[in-house]
Amino acid sequence: MRSTAVRHLALTLAAAVALLALTYGLAPFRNYQLATVAAYLCATAGLTVLTGLSGQLSLGHGALMATGAYPVALAQNEFRDRDVSGGWVLPVSLAIGVATALVAGLVVGLAAARLRGPYLAGVTLAVAVIVPALTTAFDSVFNGDQGLSVYIEPPPLSLGATFPYERWQAWIALTGALLTMFLLANLVRSRYGRHFRAVRDDEVAARLAGINVARTQVLAFVVSAACAGLGGGLLAVLAQSVSPGAFSLTLSLFLVMAVVIGGLGRLAGAVWGAILLVLLPETSHSLTEALSLSPAAAQRLDGNLPLAIFGITLVAVMLLAPGGVQGLLARAARRLRPRRDHREVGTP
Image 1: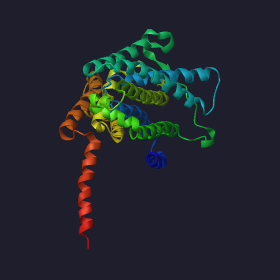
Image 2: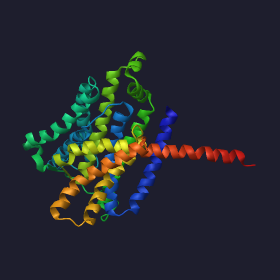
Image 3: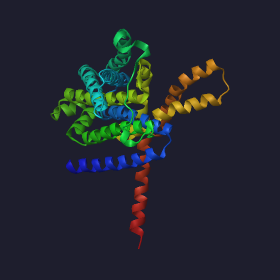
Image 4: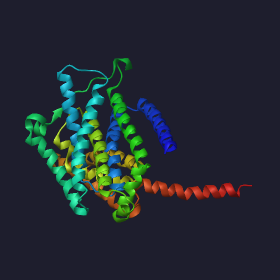
């Protein structure tokens, strides 16, 4: 286990160095997109653990992201009103958002541990509807449909007066995503990860093996909710605002489809899913602009086209590559490996 953690740490540090170099070579808008991918990656990685490893379907992860985003907005604005500043402020706000989402995940997980199949999906679907409604019901706190602005301090002066703000955003989001992937990779390879897979494959056999099935399922939900909360908090930091519309039921559906397309049950597949979540709106917007439509028709198409593209892509992946993008790449690597080994053996 220790050697696995060391290997994961080495991979994380190598990825951090590569991404750091990449941020210096990207334009500001591309850095912002990279930061958005990192924020979504926190949520898709957590959902991969929940659905792909423990076998629990959640249709309310967009709402869990909101439970992390709103506390970050409230905490940041409170720090601003009290004239509190410093490098520790944003990490504390994000920690508050993660803790809030963790508690929400615990409540939902305790209920979900007693349910199966469509009943579990129904509960998480209700969460996706109830959480945005609460922001409207408590309008004095959450400012209803208009949402809240999020105060973010500028980059440290030590980075220079002309340091691009989008690069600073990318650094913040990538730090959260790399930390999430490192912790989840170790969790998956630990005893708890084995318990997740055992419960997913056969609950009766897992129970006979001495595994507390209910506790394992609640743990998976708590971990996944905490990751979603961090992702939602990072999105609030990037957009510098938070509103119910940003965490609608559509986002929850997109998250599920993203992890399935990327490769359900593989953390690397969560990366592909997060990339798809960012590239899809841009692609649909480009297609809408390419068509000669009236403004009203273009607006309707721009709103529904991403969901249609996601659905078509999901059907195509399920037919052509049931293991998702990452499964397809893994099969291709396995096919190339025997050929390489054969050439090495046959070489005089």
